[in-house]
Length: 348
Ligand code: SAH
Ligand code: SF4
Image 1 (spheres, rainbow, N blue to C red):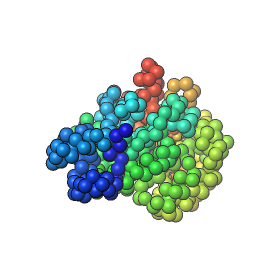
Image 2: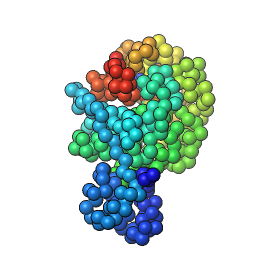
Image 3: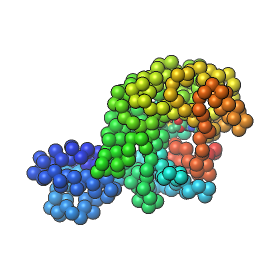
Image 4: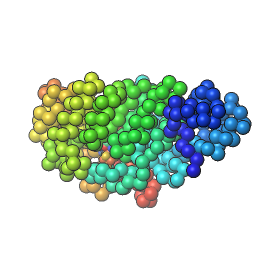
């Protein structure tokens, strides 16, 4: 079985090349090509034909092929359905902000966490993505749109902390000097709250932004919509968040999908202010995307405004997240479901 060359660090590649009798600078040349996004060894024009042949036999270069692409008429957001060598598919979304391009990539094919409001959660789990498959999503988008990505959010399909090793490997590769060189401060990782992994991440002291999908102020509501809460309840999760801030000095971003009549009352807002007291945080309110079959509806605008004002009075900053690409169902999980099951999802 050929090995996944693009998941190797520059150091690991140098060690592998040393075993083949190749100098370190050669490994560095190959590393640079891989991170520029070449899809074959033949594109590595400064590498001898002989060595390219050896590499072809020993390694493969992972790639993400475009199966489907939707471009928003409103804001140019591009949503991709991408496939890997085994035919498994994930979604990635490329968004343009005033400061540059942000890519929202997937970390798993499907997800095991089963959140009741989430299209990905409803589709089950197939497999983890490798570090190179995460990189390939970015590279395919860059090539297709002819742009450079400056920011990354791990907020597509899958739970990043349930694929911890590959995600950490990806973060090191994508931020490496001879790689895409995207600094940790330009990367956000979103988690449903796998507590032991939050502690582990905190101890690594990376400068990335941690987003925590909270979506409820207490166990009663949270366990109903997010099964992971039965294992790691709100109190444990927030304790881990406090530790994260203490270790990294980074503000945590709490995601809160506003679901009509479920988690959007004044009482919920007040309870949230108590829970978040003393945590360096920012709250992102997202009107829930009504995924087919869940019965959930997004909260009314007035409700969101009122919710925010309660948070702000308690000194907690909160914003309603700008929804890009709302005409193309840009939130992840919905496109793959619609292609796989032969129907388009409502909402957006
Ligand atoms: N598994 C990780 C990251 C992927 S989900 C996590 O759960 O955090 C990315 C974000 O989209 C999460 O905040 C998730 O809760 C949210 N989300 C999922 N389905 C949604 C929906 N139907 N409407 C609004 N937000 C949703
Ligand atoms: Fe998985 Fe995140 Fe969806 Fe929950 S919201 S099912 S953790 S992808």
